[in-house]
Image 1 (spheres, rainbow, N blue to C red):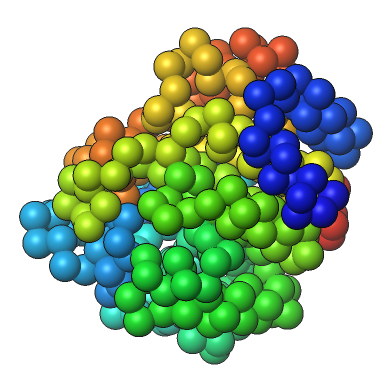
Image 2: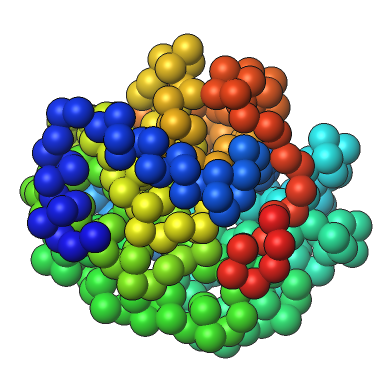
Length: 327
C-alpha cells in the first residue's frame, strides 16, 4: 500500500471494506483474542515541554508526584491477583529518576512476578540506561513518535528532533526490547499526508506494538483551545496500520475510549485493535496524571464488557510480540 492509496482511504466515506480487511488480518495473526495489559503511572514529573501534554515541565498548576517503590510493588500484587501478565510502568521524562532506582524497581517487581512482562514508557533516556533496564529485567519499551513530520515534531517538542527519537527506537530494538511506538491523530497543522507518512513509517519500522489515538486538548497546555481529533479518522489510521504491519499489537487507546461513548467502544476492535490497557494507578495519583483532560479510567469490568460487545475473547496471557515469541 503506497501513500496515495493510504491517503485515499483516509479521505473515504465508505470504510466497511477497510475494517473488514483489518479484522481479517488481525484474526489471521492473533485470532479472536483481546490481550489485557495493566498500567501504573508511577510519576508525573517531566523535564520536557511538549505542547500537547499536561505533564509539561512549565505546568505549575499540576501537583507533582512520584510513587514509592514499595507502593508500586504493592499495586503489582493486585495486578497479579487479577491474572494480568503484562505490567506497563509509565512516567514523564524525568532523568532525576535515576538509572539505579529504576533498575531496582524492575528487579523488585521481577522478584515477585518473574513470568510477568514489564513494559517501560519513560521517554528518551541514555543508551546505558536502556541497557541497564533491559539487564534488570525489562522486556518492552514504548516510545511514541507522535508524528513523522520533522517540522511538526520540532514545533510540538521544543528542543527535540524527530531523528533523535527514531535513533532511540533503533537503539531500543538493538538492545533487545520489544519496541512500541505510535502517533496522535488530529494535531494542529497535521495533514492527511502526514498521517499517511506515519503509517508508512510503521510499515517500514515494523514495531511490536503501535499506539494510535486521537488528540485531546489539556487546559494547561499551549494547545488548550484546539478541538479534539476525530475518532473516525483515528479508527481509519488504526485499520490501515493493522493492514500494513500485519501482526503488531494495537491497543484500544485510552484517548479513543475517552472521546467515545462506552456503548460504542467496541468499534475500535472492528478496526483491528487487539489490546486493552487497564489503569491500576491509585486514584489519588491518577487524578494528577493529566496528559489530557477528562482521561478515562479503564477497569477490568470495562474490559470484560467491551470485549463481550465486540464478540472477542479475553486473553490474560503475557502475549509477547509475534515476531519474537508466541501470543
